[in-house]
Image 1 (cartoon, rainbow, N blue to C red):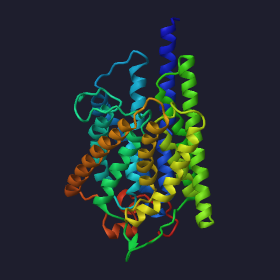
Image 2: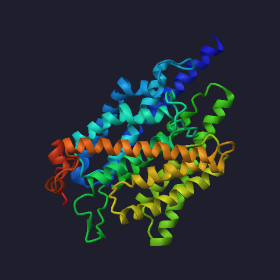
Image 3: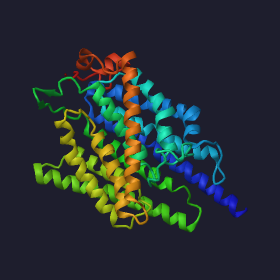
Length: 391
């Protein structure tokens, strides 16, 4: 077998394996969100996550991939493997958004937004960062380093979520007379399962983004990328636990897990560039940011049941800036420009899209529907029919 053929086969297999790991994030998001919402909305959340994977993937196949990359050609691996790897990413931007508006958003308008995000908004973001760069020479032409999408994926989803929250508003009863009403998670074991499925998926997310494993140098790069990814998650969990215990004398598992996820988001922009110690600092700052950002957004009455703004938007920004701070030969100004350009585009395009859809089909479920639960009114299947529905 020729060496070129061997490398082609190995890299094709590596892309397919990474894609499978990333798909583990589909049940990861589903379980995390199902555990954090009330029992009366669990089936709705699971339905949303299932449909996002299906609808977003089909739209990326039909429209989005060509817009993002400009061509269906690849010389280093099977084009079908290259497509599947990229397809695995697309739904994550919408998962971030959908989780943050859980318990008060109807499924049909959310699926309409999914079509637009997967076919147009996200592919355009990819085009100006990772892709074909069809608009080179314009202000949108950026030179940001973002290996696996701290900004391209996580912040894009976070900006879309912020737009959605501003239009849709908080859950019924979440804020009363300026006070925050705590709505506890319904199933902590599902939260833990979902977070660890996401953590596992991150190894394909970041490791696969190196692009090749068929040489000694690339194999080392993949291994270092995965190690640094894991390290940042560990540091995020530890610092979140420490801050929570110091401030409240409680070790809140939901905040510890979100701290880990914040660290994972933060390291995603440059895990291949760092030494083995830098991700400890990056992940620790990411975990700390989550702990402080969650109450900050609540004070602004930006209702986010899963903490997605804190995990994905805040740490997407931090992680992209961190590359400019800690990595050699990466301009922090280029990183900042990428954050601003993509943030402005993602927020404005998402806001306009959601605003228009909302004028045609209301995003927000009626107060009575929220009170009874979306499971009964949206999907007709209750996740826990033997339980008395909470109000």
